[in-house]
Image (cartoon, rainbow, N blue to C red):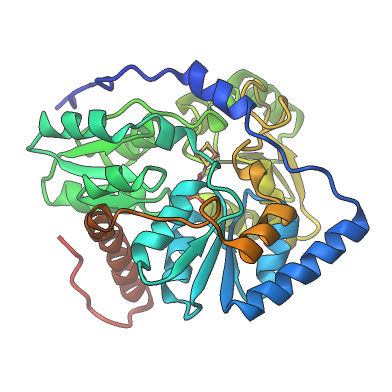
Length: 368
Ligand code: 13P
Ligand code: SF4
């Protein structure tokens, strides 16, 4: 059966989203002494405030190394949510983009959640306004609503499931096996990839990540020809013709694991360049090459780096811990938070059931 095709009911102005990305302010450059002083201050503040630092792979490597050194975590968005939820700290400091901070708050309403800046957007979140999305869902009551974690709390509250890229295929397979039809939002490329792999019936919202949208298949083909020994690792937010050239398609963590486990010594990587810090540590001695981009949306205009992830720096991280004012603290409306929590918890419980099945620890029934 040919699945229904749909365009988002509200036209998405990607050029406007790109303009917002270009205007995202970069942290001021710091010299070595300033960086060292800020690192020390942040370490003291984390301890004094019983706080834990949770960072995404795409943020500045200074922040990633600080998270590692202070007992926090550096990971993909699924593990960030899981780690923050399981950690006993009273305050969670999230270095990433706003939906990641909101997810932490939704899962831990009793904790304080701080971010270096609340202005770190995500183009997928921006391309899925809650009211228009809710109306779209109302038009398709027969479908199970599955949304990517890169969305606002209100969009998650409207969903049956929240998923991240590391678990999207498994959730779609699970729903498809039960004969359920899916309404998917907001990333059309990740959605198309999941649909292709699982054969599930998926009706797509038409959002996209302006950073991954920049990877170019023609230039990648040429680069592959110059490096025939290289394996190509691609994040599924990339365009389908780029995904088609991949040896491995996966979330940020899955891409790092592929660099560790594949026998290749060279990798061409189509995702945000922030990932190279952990990738090089995980697979020392291997060579990593950035996949070519059109250069329209990145923080430096020519490389793949999310301009909003780039807003996180040592100075605003220290300020968040020092002042924790309204410009740093995440708040989520409690009613929206309670609803959104159901769809996120469903994913976390499902992930746990998969983990237990894989390790043979228990025969746990998957959530409906
Ligand atoms: P991951 O869930 O793979 O970390 O992806 C999050 C993201 O924003 C990628 O652009
Ligand atoms: Fe959003 Fe893309 Fe940035 Fe990830 S890289 S946070 S999907 S804009």
